[in-house]
Length: 326
Ligand code: PBG
Image (cartoon, rainbow, N blue to C red):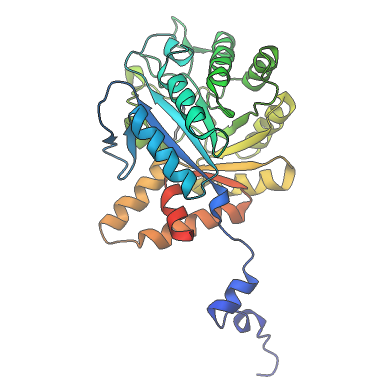
């Protein structure tokens, strides 16, 4: 057997050799922690379907962001859970709304020690749970919705958002937000566009975290992408970059690694991926049942997302990964 090429196994002989030839490294610098701040609570509450993830009070949010900054996590993305919801979602642009207050607190406490991004959408704020204005016929209206997104963007930037991340999947939303931010003088606030966002059943636990249920058993299939489509994601990303997106996102992550890889091959802007609530919950619950090794699967999935081509990852494991890697 002299013709066997032995390079593959030769280079796997020891941990130090494997480290030397590793192509992908997950670093604390790659992480953004999604955080929830809720208006009407006196103490932080764990989200029932997301073990270890909290709905924060303003105070506990400040503490949590400080802890993440101390661990070296470079970014957080804040989601608001308002006490009052209405048809338009007006708390989303109220200067005293829950996220705007959080942004003011966080910029006073930490300045630019940690990058504070905001999810820019309306579903957390509307009483019907859709991401925009619902017409009488039940349709979510694109053009009046992006006017509201523009207002939310300015309110968030004014309160101190360092990145805004539109997640509503309306056509033209990035252009509308860029124009509004520039018009209000926020030319340096970048847009992280949720460009390839799929209508996914992996978002279930997130909706508990933000107390959202879509009215009349509805869904988001008329605005978020169909999971059967890959080429369409490239079209969405192309449009968002043309409209002024500074960074783009693929969401969810693990079931869409092909989309991340294709985006990496085609675009040079920073690419992120969101390991969403359902991906996190599957690992947590399987580990709690003794079926999977939580830490090992956490590292394997996140490293796979990077290997596919993501520059950074939004993940509920951010704190755990930072603790492990520190
Ligand atoms: C919309 C938004 C959603 C998520 C992030 N932003 C939910 C949705 O589109 O229904 C999901 C995140 C997760 O599941 O972790 N504001």
